[in-house]
Image (cartoon, rainbow over the protein chains, first blue to last red):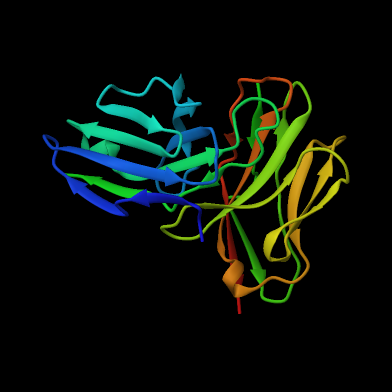
Length: 115
Length: 115
């Protein structure tokens, strides 16, 4: 069982909707990540939070807006998405970023379909 | 720059036979290497990692991997494959010398174990 919990597991939204994906971990990790994964492809890094501060934004369109309310929670706010944004969105956490980061722990993902 | 290659899109093996999933990497410093497994519609599960020390690393579910510095490889192995091992496997690398570096994933290898 994963120790990173993502909700919802499935989400269908129209292009004008506003929705949010949520991620929670209670391992005391201080780094949290959002990845996007298309079918049969590797995960692509979107955002990294380190100690609740955004440290990396991989040139993600502004229709994706991350938020880290505290060290255990990570949200991804979605607005005006396009059908090509349909994918599996994975949250991950690690002890920290930088040297000795260790492995990432992934959630089960949120399957997003944009109509 | 860091990169990782998984030269085989798919590996087929009969149940009970040994399996190998290949991975080669390129980093400018010392590598941190990881293997993850992904079952359909699930997140990535950590299998094993190489940081320093013994070149043969043992991980979850009977998997092991051998770090070969001269060949810049980190192949995943298992002595006797199970049908339940059928999944998508990702190799990943991080350059130890670059504090800001995130994980780079290989393209993935689909393992099919047939009864």
